[in-house]
Image 1 (spheres, rainbow, N blue to C red):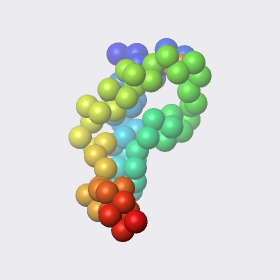
Image 2 (image 1 turned 60 degrees about the horizontal axis):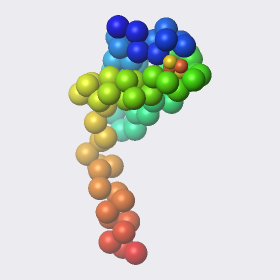
Image 3 (image 1 turned 30 degrees about the vertical axis):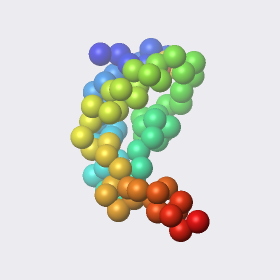
Image 4 (image 1 turned 60 degrees about the vertical axis):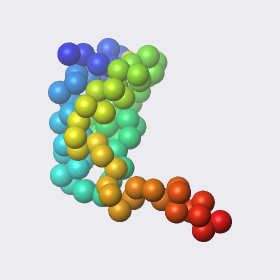
Length: 79
Ligand code: FES
């Protein structure tokens, strides 16, 4: 299914990019911008962003690494 019509990016492209990034770096935080760059493309109109994000969220490899979770709460507690 085409997710980004400006760049002809499919849901399979997005999942492949996320899987590749997670395999390359288990601690990386994966953002839409990184997915675009991994695919050698850049966002244009941004109209796909909602569908792009929901497609990304379907991938189990999108998770933020455990050691990086809760850093904001930790920072706020330390003042
Ligand atoms: S539809 Fe994705 S940037 Fe335009």
